[in-house]
Image 1 (cartoon, one colour):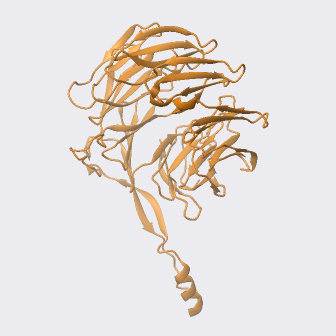
Image 2 (image 1 turned 90 degrees about the vertical axis):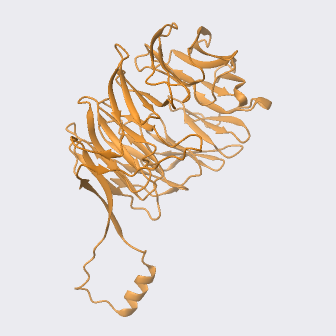
Length: 459
């Protein structure tokens, strides 16, 4: 891997959808850099500190959320002199997002009073009253033709279907939830999944015309659904719950065909490879060197406390994983499947049980078994699958990157001084990683894996 120099950032950073540019927030400035050279392509000055950045799908526009103001500013890469400012006045702006056509911006006001669709073409706007959430509860079809927007009125949840061409409401139907948490279109745009708040375990599948295709409830007592995710192929729906179980439904009968339990004690029979991160001090043989006392004294004062080389050890089963029992007297317990992500080919799904924050589980859906367990020293901050091949990358807030492929797992040291990776993002073609430190960011060029997924640690 090849790493760039580190550059300053004070907030969100993200790749453009075409993978050519990266937008970086530096206080009130929006810096647009070229991905290959990281040279500054455009520099825009906003009216306040940037809290949020989102690219339009065509990579020609980028919006900045100035939530302290609160307002939205949008910029054009093709016409740098063009500007757009959206201000809802006393209603405020809690969240903003692009529409699939890249020519409309959807904003949600404070206290979820209304959702407004702003046109960049003719300055027209359309209002949807009482959206359920600010940042959640809105989902677009894969082809960009329709939007599903959750609303709530008279103590009941509804789904509004809007055309993304005219922004007219095509249909409204009520859903059987007590307190809707979120929705998401299926990858083939044939169904909408709806799940309830953690207080009531309920996963509902609706057709676009409002028919309830299926209702799934794993249990009644206890906290329920924590995370939901469609597989990229659209054939599987993964549901992560507070009971530390991952359940996978099929798209034909909407029945559960796999249940994966995250236990702190892993016992036989288990064919999964268990990798544990360990520290290994770097041993330097200096017996044959002749150094003066002044040189040794000066370098010992300037040297860091210790040179640490990190590697994975393969552990034997049975093994006990590090486990944190959540306190019973505090809300929002840190347990259950809080992090979940599918591989590009839908064969693998990675999960993290929040009561074991330093452990990542990788499940093989084709063979319905556990493929690997990665045990880290520190809690896992982020994990993301390569969009071009079967490779998982994760970070823990250390100076290391951790990667897994079906061939094995390995560690990569970031060659930048005092750079601890707290977040990471792939670009759309899988050729580059964006790595974030607390106040810096850098990019890393990642070699493409062959189709056989064989990857050596020497690379």
